[in-house]
Length: 219
Image 1: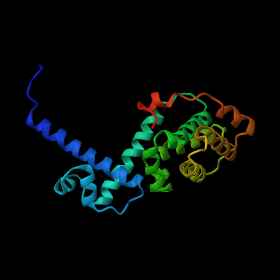
Image 2: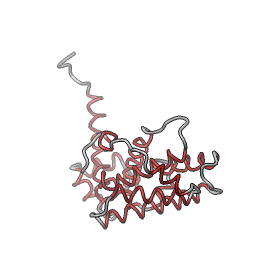
Image 3: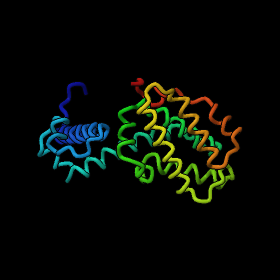
Image 4: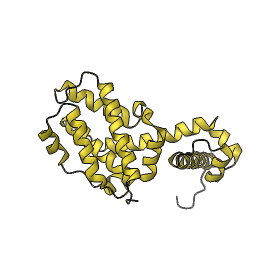
């Protein structure tokens, strides 16, 4: 009913969720800036919450930063999950995700800086990009699409290529991000065992509109 009063318990829970979200966003900003040594007071000031509120949600700055990274990983994972198609060529699935994440270094610069500044360990997290890429590599190897004896090693090499691409795009803003992402994807596909001609064909496949996919305007 319009104008009905919201129960006090619901309001309290909503405020708690808003406070936690503000802290996570603030932490992501510090991570993106490469400032992993910011004191808790500085983080709470950026989030516009009190010190006491911080410790209602997190025991330490390290726990908050872990939550901030996991939130980023979950967002990227959910984004890639929108694209999954049952029965699709696993090589195409892997390549599409790699090409899209490569483009996101330009399309979502804040998220990209979080990824770059928290290092390659993210690719071996149990959340976000890593498990999805490992799944796609494993399925493609089992289907005979990739020539891979050790999927985890292949994931590490592919992750290195992805982070290297991201760093290059970060330091060379004039570089064409989409073209560079496709070239990098082609190189990884060939490394995984695809013939160059087939890698070229896969990297020429159309991609979904990124603005529509992520639900935001490019920034």
